[in-house]
Structures are given as C-alpha cells and as structure tokens.
Amino acid sequence: MAIFLTMAIFADVVFAGLPDTIAKVKASVVGVGSVLPVKGPKAVESPVSLRGTGFVVGNGRLVVTNFHVVQKPLNEAAGERLTIFTGEGKVARAYPARIVRTDAAHDLALLEFNGGRHPPMVLNATRLVREGENIAFTGFPIGLVLGLQPVTHRGIISAVTPIVMPALSAKMLTPEQIKRAREPFNVYQLDATAYPGNSGSPVYDVETGEVLAVINSVFVKETREAMLTDPSNISYAIPAIHIQSLVDSVGPGQQ
Image (cartoon, rainbow, N blue to C red; front, side, top):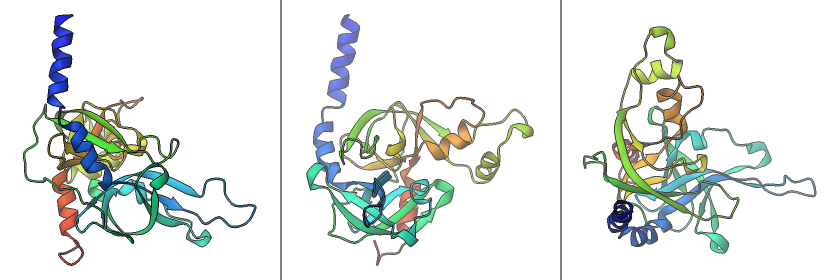
C-alpha cells in the first residue's frame, strides 16, 4: 500500500506544472477538418468534419498536422473547404485554410489559415529526447462528438526506436516497409494512449510546453506493426526535427 501511495505522490510532483502548461498551449491547438456549405432541404446531415488535430507555429497562421489528415481529396465541386477550427465550446471559430507544404515521408503537412494570428508553439528540435522523459499531448481524440473540446493525455517517452522493424525474411517486407527503409528515421514510442482524432497533436514538455514531437499512429503502425494481425494500442510520435525542417522550408517571409 505504501509503495503505491509513494508512486502516486511522485507522479503528482512530476506533473505539478502541467495544469499551467495546458492552459498555455490550448490556445495553440486547433482542429483540422472541412466545411461543406448547407444548401437547401437535401443538405448533408454533417456539414462540418473534423479529421484530426494540428497546432499553430511560426507567424501565428501556420499549422502543423499529419499529412494523412489532409490527404483525402475535398469535394470541391460541392464547395467543401479545408478548415481550421480554433477556440473551444461555444466560442469555437472556423477559418478557411490551404496546404502550404507537405512531407509525405514523415507524414507531415503545413497549413496556412486566414484569420487572426494565434499564439504559436515553440519547437524544440535540438534537444536530445531521452527515454523516460515526461510528456503530454493535447488534441481532439473523439472529434466533434462532445463539441470542440481539447483533451490532454500525459505519459513518458517509453522508447526511441526505428520506424522500420527488421523482417525475418524479404518475403515478409511490405511495400511500406521497403519504401521507408530507404530513408529510415527514429520515432518516439509513448506510454500514453492516443486515438485517431489525436493525429497531428503536439507532444510537448510538461514544464515548458515546447513541442518535442507530433502524434502519429496510423503512418507508423503501417510500418512497425505490419506483421501483427491486431495492431497494438501503442502510440507513436514523429520527432520535432522533421517538423522544424518543414517549417524552415517555407522561407522567412511566410514564417
């Protein structure tokens, strides 16, 4: 009993600064989706779609998310528009957006939205992230079911691991594994649960709020867990160094 009590107290101390950090980063976390204009009595039941999460960087109008979140084509003929959702609850707002850059190799996309500038998150792409570090991530794990309400999960970096698992034979390699094995890179395995709507959520330092990575389960699971009949519930994240490279690619004028 004493051991469990000690562990609980230790966890509270470790994450003592997290409430203040969450309050600081929430204004920078946005929903990424689309809006379809409502036209007449035969309009679709759900004109608003939330595909995933993103977070504001750079000049306050740039948003980082996963490439797979925005990869699905929009129904432009029907007027469907890529949209960024900010705020929460009754004060949520929607802004039209466009894709500025993509990095399919790391499943990243950089968007720009029309609207007022929002507080950007700070990327920390230079610090060596170690196994056991405390992290948190904020996003929209259940979409718009309960409204635009950001949710935070906490955990640790449980492993720094290659995106491609070694195969026992060439016959076991999938096309995705072969493609990514040509340019391998490390990802973070997290001891925290992420859900589909969390794709694109910032993974940040619990004390400083600096972005260390971006949540990505779908893209990584296609490679690391391709041999599993039932993919695990393990969550993964793409390191911030790749996010920084994407942001730097747009040039100083757009940053």
